[in-house]
Length: 609
Image (cartoon, rainbow, N blue to C red; front, side, top):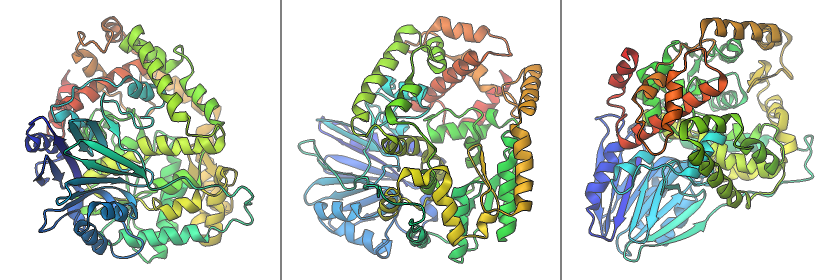
């Protein structure tokens, strides 16, 4: 379900504005749109993957109260249907309290017609996308950023700090977005909006738990983590029994698969081959796990031309170019999800909290990422945007980060909290909650407050290097732990059988050996390609040929130099070309030039240019 909201004082036609917003969020013409009028505004809903749900995400009463939710909320205390029916019938203060007690990745809105109040609540980590533009005479809310520009009330202008974060981090930071004047609603937020006055009350309904500083690995009890995840899985099954688990060679998807087997759910698995990464060690491990646990598995090998295809363009529209995606494996998954699957199981939450990567102190990490304007990403930005705008972006991001970082401690724990609130929220969770949700219900166990209160209290030193995960598998799922784990580019073989270890380790270590990497690099140079596996995408060339050189955001001379370059490119030129591509693709999506409907024609135009 997608949501659009408009309340305005200056005689604007809110229903017409919401209609434009909902149309921009439609994935296909089969999506049902519903526009509801209320005093001073209108709310619109677009049904997408929610059509597979047994729970109604839009509810009304005879008193004209309205409850609508986006995402997949769950209730660990009882049936969700009864909770939602209760919420829509109470006054706004009580409704806000009841919405705050829900778990999962979701955002909920309740209109109290008698008191003329709008309540808006986000999940504890704010992972479910919800965007807002607010001033005294206007409130806009939507689940898609492109809906905000489609309202006609906001210009498609770059947010300098937002684009600075895109360059330095590869995703948004804090509440800033790439679109000027629009921010994401904060995590664990309860808003009460009063249309007659335009006032907006804000409260927070969850805080990060305190760490158990003296806890040791020997004393760590992983049982509660498993039981809480099992409770969440049972709650998600209230939506639909039809589902697929996205399987890889890592910890997170195997943890979900083991839990599903424990619950007696015969859920098939889907895995994509990674021929371009570590000789598909990830795919080989997924096959071994499925075979070992007796789970039906479908393996898909994407075509080498994927990054010039209609499917990739559709991904850009759904993702709204929120992060770099050319030649990144994760961008391919959505192309193989079908509405008939019902739901997909994703391990975003446990992966972030149970197996964090070793990181330095927060300030040291930020300093490394921001570095100076002489670093590679910012030199590329110089070619695309010119010296003045590039420096303004860097300065805007630096100033914004000062305020963001003030709420985090300058240590490893503070860095984990920062990464959770930014990397997970604005990048990892975008895939299931913003992209997959257009076709299927994203089931993401691990986003309950009980689970995070338990897992986040474990000291980071016990969670690093997969210590907590490995103990969890040894204690609860020893059979599933017999196959090695691949996380990032590291192989974990602790406790696995010698035969399984040898089968996984041989191709893994060969692919990482220096002679093999040098040979593959030389092959790419001879072929004049950017990737060892993927065919060079025609999209950067197409974008550079069609970019508006008179646009004030870009440096025309820099773009002309990029247009004149002849492969093979140096690394800085490659990064600059990709940045120019993402900037223009973002504008086309925001302006409605690149849509799901015309992605096929757009791809054909790229191939013939």
